[in-house]
Length: 367
Image 1: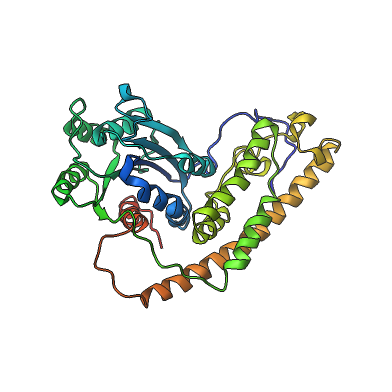
Image 2: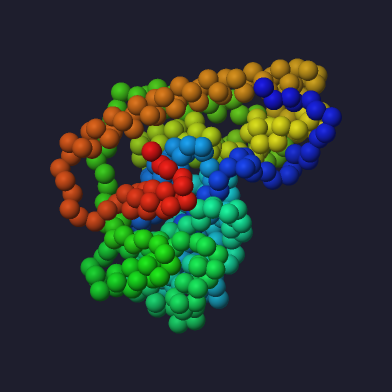
């Protein structure tokens, strides 16, 4: 159990790595948001949680950060090649999902080289030896249409930073374009896939769904927000639960599974902050920064309250993890009985297959 009252206190505003010493995984997802890409955006909304759940199954669990870029959208800044960093590398996957849900398509020039260049240059990639650093760039139209930033310069930059670039081409009746995407990823040491961005997997209900949904709601009550960021974060947590449910029932269940994992981290939550920084001192917090039920508590009562919430969360996470594993097994067996599909992969099939292979190359095995 964590000692909540040490002599040495660190600032609660300090950003922390929730898994110090763990292998680091950095993912940058670059999505084409031109007019033809509604299916791609919808697929990402549904399947992001399934993708990150795979990474949560690595043993020991890594330290995960995700970034999101949009490109090919007339609403973005033309001086930047219609490329926009929606959010930089962060442990806060809820915030990534919020940004993803705000994306809207609007026709433009799809500068693949530009968005990859910006992801490589603008993000603060891990410097840990052996870390897994990946860019996924998804879209269509010719990969080399950017006349200002050439693909060869991006290839050199990716190699210098030890970042793998994977390409996912969204087919739309122009198969001659695809070869350029494949060549680009190959030069970057990455993989290439062709997907049907509108492809949807059959919905498979399981006997575990209701219990996972219930526990996903209950676990929110174990979060102890502090400060202005805490209040906003708690609201955003509930909002992203709702967004996942709106995207698809399966997305909400996959999100529930991720909330039970060691990779789900919220900087605004007192318990997550303490897990990452056990030397933090509850006495350094101002009463007005605490939830209303804690403001009149003594130091000892605060500690007891946090210990209770922590124990409740561990219990709920254990139940959710068990149910999530059983749900995954049920779906796996059900999918084996589905007719074979010789067509293009879906978004998550492509991303998960690449992640599995590239994680293994860094001695991170996804079961």
